Length: 209
Ligand SMILES: [Fe+2]
Image (cartoon, rainbow, N blue to C red):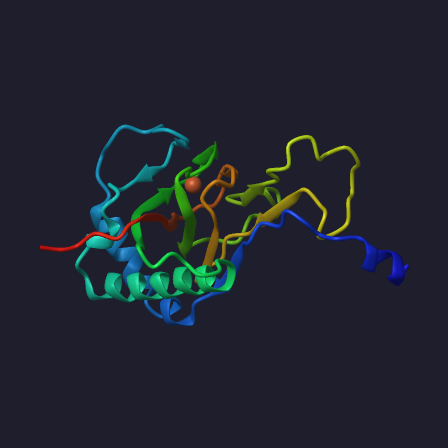
């Protein structure tokens, strides 16, 4: 069997990074306060976001010191996954990052969508209750297999399977390609679920001045 496995190539892989960020875990209570303090009354059900609240896409300009720490950690994570997967990143190109905050309460969910045009998308969990036993999919992040028509046989083994589900956990940072479809299952926790999202876009380097 080992010989046969050696003859099988794993192609068309998708890079997904899942990491705990201890530096951010320490400031999660403060990040939670910051996001909640900016929550406003606004129309629900915007785009793929059903029942939850999203901030404007100005997260990178929030000026609290803890947000600076978040920006640094996120920037480092994006730089590292880019260095690990992109050969000879064009020197005339820059990566710019935009971000926003999300608050979900019971019943909120996010329909399947992608962040087309972004090199990477990221989600960081500030507040996330474990899923209740009767709702194991509560708030689960599902990354959707982009290989159209691949689901011909159930129970394909890793790394050829179809599902990649991530149970939100406070302090977890997930980075995935912006083109990848993803969705968030309805949240059944009693408290708030808070995440920070970001897109990293590649743009031509601009001269300042
Ligand atoms: Fe998204």
